[in-house]
Length: 308
Image 1 (cartoon, one colour):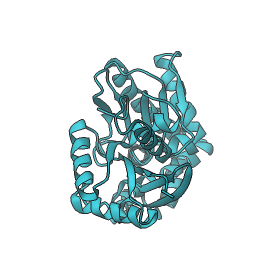
Image 2 (cartoon, helix red, strand yellow):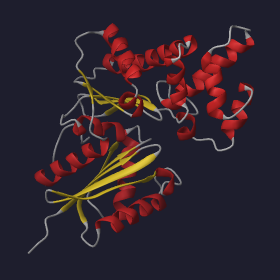
Image 3 (tube, one colour):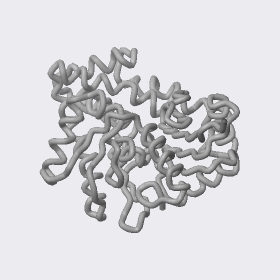
């Protein structure tokens, strides 16, 4: 008896990579690894071979019929096409590569829309009427990521340092950051964070900001307000460029921090109270898997947000 075909969905995030595989209607694989365990460069052929080997080892002898990858950091159609070509040559799979934020609408069971990610980093993504990818943000933690974990931690430290230099009254955020970073003077933060610099390490300290807010931090509230406004402005820019559809929210800050989620909704309502905002509860990898299933059902030829 012939085995049902295998389809694989992959979500490559800045911190972790998760893939799921379906054989027929049965989930046969659900695995997560650190992204830096295989991605050493920017989706080089060697990177693609390493990811292929990990997936091959998990699904066994039966090769996937279709693989859909949401790739963090691929923020232009040109980059997506390059990545897709590299993965295709390295794997021999029928493969589709999308920006990782594009998985959100499919994860929620939708089609096109605007994806807003606030996790380790931040980005706002949509497709225009011609099917071209349009992004705002996603510059990475060294240059931006305001509204994401790394950007908020950077802003929180800067705010506390500026307050201290102005000899303002000490804020509880200052003390919580000292404790989180395991330093005695916040001027040591740069040296402390430079030991193993990464977006993930920066973002891991974002919880300090919300702990401080719970304890009455004025600086913490101001930092979040400014970061939320920046993320809202990114969304507004995409709307001005003609992006349509529901707004799908994803990423750890939206998912795990109700205060941040509500602050963003309040900020968006300042733009318009008619925008449909959906907090996506399913992980993005489910979106990749759903798109892979659509490719299987349609024989790889399909239109919409998944194609360009």
